[in-house]
Length: 533
Image 1 (cartoon, rainbow, N blue to C red):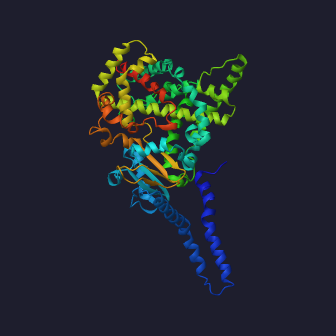
Image 2: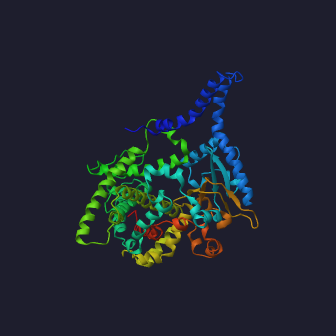
Image 3: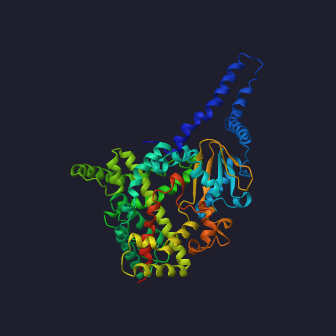
């Protein structure tokens, strides 16, 4: 049985930590026996002093070398955040606290007000450049794409969840995964709305039933189940059927209890819970940096949930591989699902599992988050809800199921989703790792470029950028879908398209961007039907 992360981390780290001091102490004690000029107190003092030297001498040398390189490149330094405390622990504490209680647009607290739209922080001796500048993000995602990778820290921290899948790979491995999955997201794969129609009707039905009881519905919970069922059916050909589980009642104000779940639903219930927790656990590990194992000293918080996920996914993969054999014998060429497409191209079950989980994570959380924020915004702005509903009725009427082209032509529907993604992007922060030293473009015309050291983590925030008044106008913090239709498009977005990046950009642009119609289709279905009737 493997050790928990904490003891494993200590067993791996302590020899490297105490090895040099012990070696220095032993060597000086040995020499003191033969060289009278070496007092015996030199050995223990030297052993103690070697600790800070091990940590800080390399950092001082690296800073010296980076300063030399900066001057050679004729660049300015990125403003450095002072007062972060020992090893940046004050900043790290703030980041963890903010991530637990606030939407990530406020993750860095008042640092943007003090230091501007880009600044340099040092966490646990690791350099991090935070930016919300469109030109910097463009350099990372497109212009200098080869120099900015996911990097060893990110891939290591997310490997238990994502393995070597497309969202956790770099270089040729990433290109292989991209080529492997991209064909499945062609238009002919995403124009069938039957899956959305079936699951949306079920979601609306159980919502109406709960409302008729006089009880509220946790929309975020319900829509998370909806997107999980749709994603599992669309990607795997295996229905999770989490919408069949009883909806939760409020924690207070009701004496009702949930109905008894049938014997087959515990798998879906466990999967839903685990699948919701693993991204959160993985993100908190990454936020806590290399010392996260010390916070999981006696148990691996991720493993039991990954066991639940794998216990569901692996039999589905096995069934798909058996279908592959039957399909080959029958001469069938077209894959029915993404999973069928993967097993058609490879027999590597680890690769198939990693890619499957990567796509499930992306397919569930991004759509569920977007739909949750759209409904939240529409509930606060009923005038836009009415306008959207009227567009739906004008386009397809109250009964007809829309086609792909119908939904594509609904301009206000697209504007509502874009505006929600502007204020609440599904990936508010992302990061890259600088392979070698480089520069970012200057912010002021005629200014010097900004120096980026090799090995630095670039944390870029589209959430901050999407809310900047100098980029979007004085009403940037207001929810107004018309900004994606009226003259503000030409004034702000057209001259600088990198100010709006809900799907990322460059070679790693979201592989499902063209499938964003999947968000509009269920939203149409929800807005075209009343939850309260």
